[in-house]
Image (cartoon, rainbow, N blue to C red; front, side):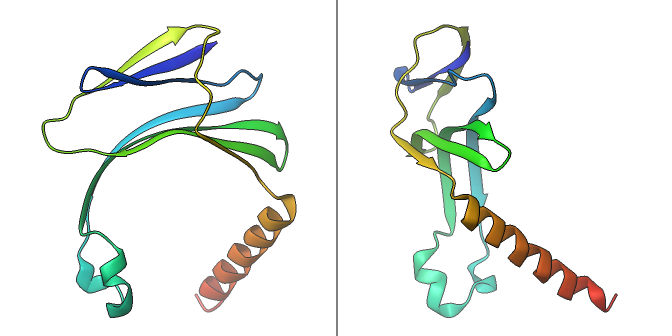
Length: 125
């Protein structure tokens, strides 16, 4: 299977892959700076102004609305850090640090709420 061998500052952090017919593996390197003036005063202390992160995650598709979410890595980074991704064909992958199955009832409820929100937003347009 295709997998990603992730190294951070020369040290291997994981080999991520999906041992399934259908799924996804993603490696995300993100930097964000927020204008905290746009956040409600009560939530500003809970939201960092600036972040630099590495995330390696994935999902296995078991059916139309049945997904298992996987996470191998979520780390804060700093300037000067080095991230290396090697794409491998291997049957040897690391076990994810966390797994969680989607709840079909929750997914359906969230989709309905989002639909209703968009409907309200665009009805007057």
